[in-house]
Amino acid sequence: MISLVRLALVPVFLWLLLGPRWDGLAILLLVFAGISDWLDGKLARWLGQLSRLGQLLDPAADRLYIVATLLAFLVRDILPWWVIAVLVGRELTLGVCVLVLRRRRFTYPEVTYVGKGATFVLMYAFPTLLFIQTDFADPLIIDVLRPVGYAFMIWGGVLYVWSGVLYVVQTWLAVRHRPSGGDERPRNAVAGV
Image (cartoon, rainbow, N blue to C red; front, side):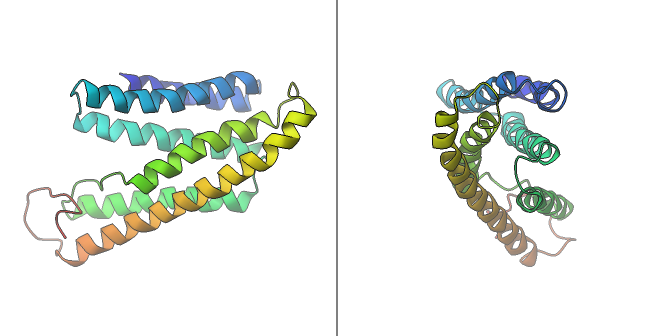
């Protein structure tokens, strides 16, 4: 349920950033998305309610928030276009990997700790970068937060791209060891290697 609420709020978040530009509310919604992401995982493990649907929805919500934020940052010129192109390119590459794995009858790749860490760091970077764009922030606070926001963005961006490289390698290793007409049972991409 938490992941579904997070998914439903993605268009609201994008509208807040691009429509009325209510950055304060957008920041709060982004913080809520980050906290609820953490809470969702904790509750699922604590209550023993892990499900395949939850394992698919949770990273999907994370990716949608990241892509929505990057799109808004591109339109509003908050980050350089090439940074956004690299991060969106990573998402497109992962989409191709998923299609290749599905065609070869593998399940989706497991989420890695590097990928989780990258998402975690980006979820700190995005609200900070958005906050320094607001009119209501004190200039001194903006001067302090600007390098922090960009440091998180660089760190998170590098981890995000690196996790993408790991997924590509994982996909390549999985399909290299198994021709497309193999066993009809879906297998895990890692376990299939």
